Length: 361
Ligand SMILES: C[C@H](N)C(=O)N[C@H](CCC(=O)O)C(=O)O
Ligand SMILES: [Mg+2]
Image (tube, rainbow, N blue to C red; front, side, top):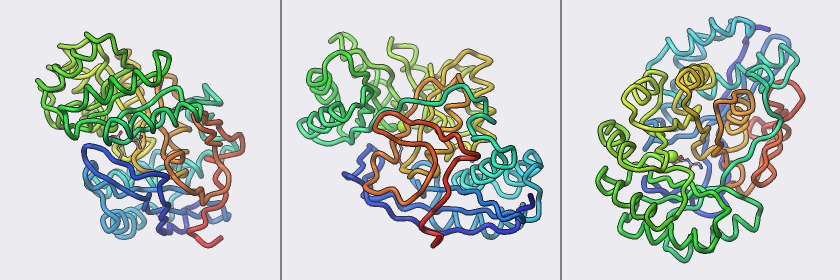
């Protein structure tokens, strides 16, 4: 199976409600999709979101990285030479992690197809089903309570609460949501770098003293503030999850060595795909640190790739794979089934996606 063609297209899928974090507000998933074709007519799919505020990637940079650097480096290579392809993919251009992720997942899709197995079985194959949380955007307290109750009524048992925009109100937000949803719903708090280290300790300790249980607090401080992450982690009982601070396996090693977090959020768009994400899984497993699998504003192609990785690797104990649930439409056929909080893995070969409307088929 030789790679003969790499094509790109754009998808634009409106969101159910605007997605609001401390970093940005977005109304739609506006991503680049990738299709790789082999000489025997097989196709593999990938997707890259332009999350400029986190990865630095834009539509333009994703398209030119693929067209000018990645495609010339890997077209003509055999899919079975997975390691060789990954070397070229990661060696042909620095950074550009979202473009690399889109191509990496399409290659893994084809590799699993060449083995006649669903991708998650190639990646370890532990679970046929995983559970995701649902994100509650940062808004006024009442609106967040209404959104949380709606999510619970839809069957979600884990909520990811966005905060960090006006930190003074954040205790109020989390307290009101906990009061409304009761003690059995897990709350994950994501400040998206919005707090200072001292502010984070004050907020988390206040919530702890109120008896408000939190599954974790994600990226309380600036991505590059490892000292701040370390300070917060050492000063509170609630587990701290590193998100924007960990892109690469080297970042994961540093976070673990410096005890700057208790957990790592792996996202394919930060690692540049499954190949590098597997290295973080192995590092974390060696040190006994659990991981979460997350996503950017991605639709079903990219989130399916992440779900396959999570279903394959036991060290990934938490999933924030709500991209498809945030979308108003699903322009794809096949792949894992996203049924509210439940993600049921496909049993047909590869990622299971058979049709992507953006390619006109
Ligand atoms: C969509 C997912 N639940 C999420 O919250 N991801 C954010 C970043 C998403 C973005 O801005 O595209 C995160 O975990 O920080
Ligand atoms: Mg996050």
